[in-house]
Length: 265
Image (cartoon, rainbow, N blue to C red):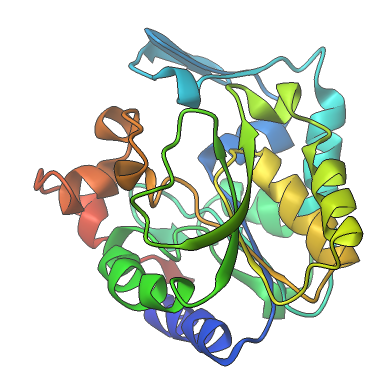
């Protein structure tokens, strides 16, 4: 049994005490890629597996995963989910309608890749009902750290109040177009003897590759998948249309996801 708030406390404690870790989120988009199913997010439509319909996605959120062309990406993502290492944590998706983890076949599918229960946690750990705590408790700690940021080329990092010593930029559909970025980051770490730095990564499925590859090779740093949690302060717009928890907490458009507490069943 895992508790949504207690898991947050665990990560907050590690961050506060300077204990290094890797946190990688396997969200809804990653599920389709793991299953090698089509995933398209573009300006006016979405395709997720067998479902499709109208949508509204800005340039930084565009994705195009083609099962026939990109199966190597699916295999790499499976490797990230099955890999085990002390303090390498994998956040799993819950049923978005019930917020209950390990209730349906989606969660069973994810856990089929790993028996490392100790290092499984919630994909939504820093968002939804925990989001105010992320802003009020995690951000002050991060503002005291040396930060490397991986973000979209359109992101403005100047308003975050962070000590950013280096940033790496990605474009749209980054898990295809910036596929080799994890190697580039590792080379930079080695060339500059980087230690005791926190990497904040907002790069779709590419984030999973960065967290796994970099933490396994350089565990003397911390690597956190922050998803879209800081997008409102980086001048990005897509969150206004596709991130319900940000609509709740930032825009005041109250909805169930803003107060959702995931439950491990």
